[in-house]
Image (cartoon, rainbow, N blue to C red; front, side):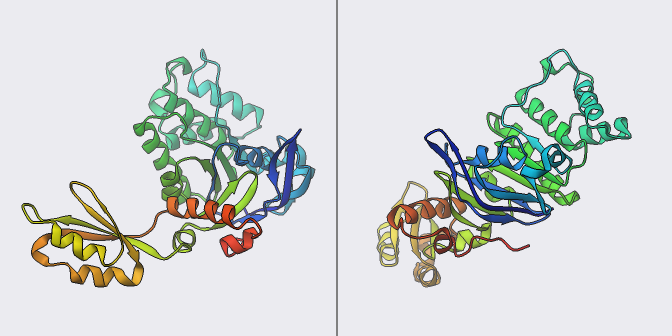
Length: 320
């Protein structure tokens, strides 16, 4: 189900939370919203799920205006907030049963079993929530959001506070939802690598404004065209000649185990060919990651404040 966000503004007193972002989220995609603290991510999500209203602008889910839809938007959008709590004395299954009854879900037991299996809580379903780890609690929250098989799933910082194992488990669940359902998944995160791994497309917000939007691949290649050639020198060899060669092609960063050369894409092959084979154990060419695109988008906006988001991102619409 496609989501369309058009010139949305939201202010809280003197604080401008959203300052006119406009973009589309393709139906069936996994879409990331990136930004630092205060960028407007949570405010956007609150508006998207109908918990608040924009001062101006419009948000549509499947062609339906969220502001006018009222409670009906919850038939289309399920929301997992960053902090979701449950009565500690209840079991996971009891929590889901309450949520299923509130939503009037038919075949409740079957849907509860499916949701528990999807998030990997089947074995813990009849344990009290008080005994759940932080990661298990987050998965229970996701299970409650999945009960009604929503066409849109909105996740606000879904892995915040989880340990590495919990993060990995949550990633696998999101990837499974993306692979096995037609749901549109929208998630926010401070972790650029997480968004890069999970998402098809990304919007970058800063101070409530849209700074860039597009597919992950588009944003990664929209920068200055530089790549990094990472070289691991052969053991017990003089690194001097290797460094002299590398410095002719780009900016060199040296560590004990690796020499990294940031250079133009066209120069990378020439550099690799110029290395003396007996000096090199191995090398690889690394494409710029989403982190580089994120920082570059923010830096360009700061240095060119008169530019519009269209000029920064190349487009403010992600096509379906």
